[in-house]
Length: 263
Image 1: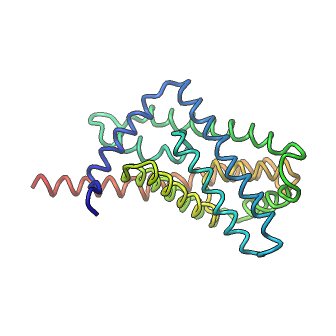
Image 2: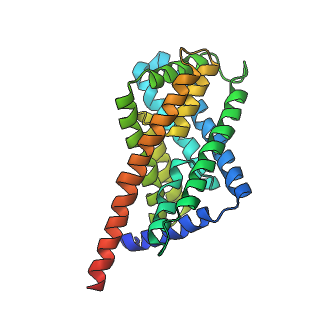
Image 3: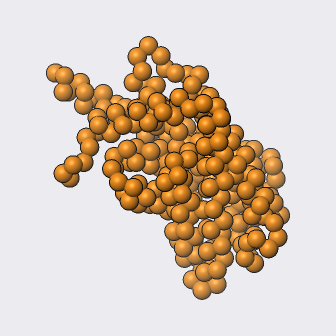
């Protein structure tokens, strides 16, 4: 397509964005991550509301309707430039690979730890707000509780595999956002990835943990032990999918292109 950036140009944009994220002050990073945490709750709550409203009429197809609305939450994140934990994989890691003389290990871990903690804190506090009786339409709590039970009661292997897919999807979103030039294109890409993420549903540690927390507050047959296990497994799977599959392969692609151009 005419005007489309090359893989090397996309990678250069990715490195630039990674540098910006790594250079954030602690206050900026904590605030941005907190905002992202409560913003994504809009998508989760909307998914539950729509699923509840349409299930009596369309049955299992309500899952598709819910996934279509969850994508709105990811659009809010991308347009507002707030950042989820997994979304901070590709860009900063690309900067670390591109940086000569240092792998930026501490800046990366600082970024990831603070993002995850404040994503969960911001999202968890907003889940408390939505869980107040009367905020959500009747029946929504039951739908969200069932989703939480489905997440927790999956075995470790499918949970881990689902998180690999979720990690790959969100890191792919980071790459695709650097490949487009307009706000409209960014919205479209974010919405499509959000739809796919919810349709699985494929585990993204923050989204999945907040799903489960909704279930706990609404009386689902899940506990904080199940929530903790879900966070650990989803985080590990997200790293494998986001760093191992998407980030490293795109780094290899660009290095191959640069080597070919220099020979």
